[in-house]
Image 1 (cartoon, helix red, strand yellow):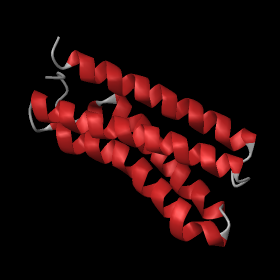
Image 2 (cartoon, rainbow, N blue to C red):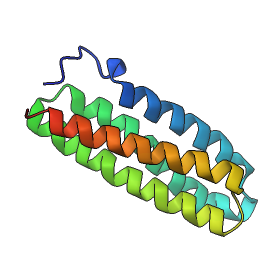
Image 3 (spheres, rainbow, N blue to C red):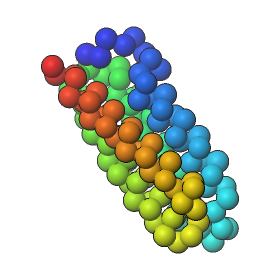
Length: 119
């Protein structure tokens, strides 16, 4: 499959965890009114990326690919929610730009891992 004994050995899982930690902490700074909707949705979406990598890793190639597809969907959701938070003024450009770039890089890594499963 991936040649990695544990999902913890996957660079994409490590980077997704780091992103989740950054966003989880940063979301604490959103206005109180956003905490019950945007903040919660953003946290659920960003946590979904590393958890789906981890869950799918031990399940064989077909199921792993399925879980990577879910993680990819979550990257699109995170990207959209970050854009919304930025446009609402909850995230400055200084915070938004590096996070959006990291989401794009993780997305590329997930596509690469997904492709490598069957090659």
